Image (cartoon, rainbow, N blue to C red):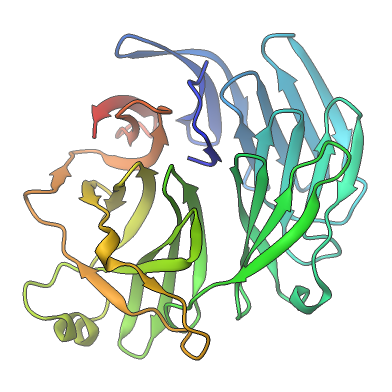
Length: 329
């Protein structure tokens, strides 16, 4: 999930077919679509799963906001140069993260109808920087910085008159050419999914940071090898991570498109960040029959159902449409 504490959703924003997503209500084990939206490859979308849905169209430089309860919508021109890569709706605000055109992080307050560009320390503003994902931890906004080393997590106090920068955390590195692809937050952890490329191949990683002690982390590298850790280093990547969620003390992820795996997170695997060592000490994890379920269809998205021990799987059919299935975790 993107927001902690988790909420009981009123609806879910889920893919409906290629190039579209829909607002779905959940009844029993079924999902009923209330409305669908056309989105292009130049767009990003987000919903708070309570009332508000937002879309940024990068080509038109426009933010679209729709309220389901009020049945109102508005189209707002974005008065800054930004290519949106990430988007988050939280209470009265829409947060936009982008690449380094002129702005990296924006806030639009829906009550005040005002834009705010959020402060980023000058020493972090290097060419090629981007904000690839956004989380909320209670009243703190968390922006995940990507692309150029070193990488950071930036923390802000959320304020309707412009959120205030607090501090940043330098992230440990998993290897060369690391790209952070997704962030998640749960009751105990902040999780980052990233990929790296080295001389021996490409690798998939999940790095966990404790919510209440962000200098404590655990690096997990995924492998299908049956023998020792070095065999994985020699063989390169034979497992591709597609999506992941955090739920309490569990990590749920999809690998090689149609395999769902659940693993328990153990506190004993965490270590402290050391100033003179920035590379992760890997914990290798091998999915097997005891923790993995295979599906006939590809799993394209995992969606949290709030505090319940249930997750929505979005599965792709042969007709390039999507079906949604609830599972217990």
